[in-house]
Length: 262
Image 1 (cartoon, rainbow, N blue to C red):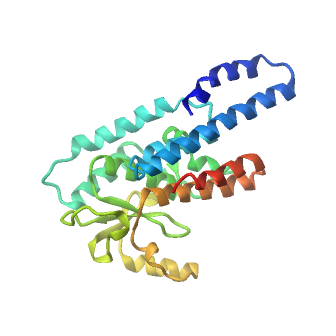
Image 2 (tube, rainbow, N blue to C red; image 1 turned 135 degrees about the vertical axis):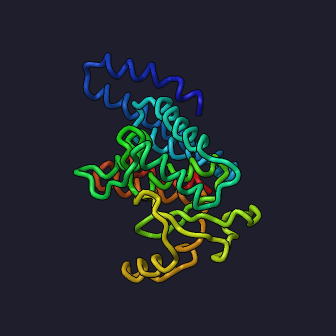
């Protein structure tokens, strides 16, 4: 892993210095391959560590898609948002009050919002640096941002793997921590929509959405899912977009990466 990425600056220079197009393409493919193996290693060890740091995995996938970007800059921006939320929190707040703080900082103060149909490339909505740079995302990227902030501050917000629209749920804080898949419906206080300024809704809305989508309701449409499930979903959705863009090599890489998350 680390051995490969140290070669990248030199390869980048070789790429810029090259006049020969086919040589330059070979170098680009080599860089992309190094990132792929590095990402595979990272996601494998991330999985073994129970997928604790959601942001790290999100950034790893984004870096594979956009290797030229300075992710450190955007990590610092994320840290600033997290800090802004932290400063407004205290132990006496109820769940709804904490939610208000999160929503106020993320959507009002830092201006994040959902972007449903971007012109052209949908792929960018899945990328960390685009999300932080433009403050625009889709249900999954905004959901991951929201979760990463909440989890970092020990606020019991979890993802819910609802097809067609990734949503979040807020768990009762009195419930003891347990593996994500073991929570029950009665332990969920409410659901929230990261695409719509963190608006709160109930199970009834999910029932309605499932009817509308004409899919068979399953437990996983209502209950918390693990961070690993979220990153698998990210990889699969990104894979679809990359395939639509006609990039066969990269789409194969992404499909293989799903296997790194176990």
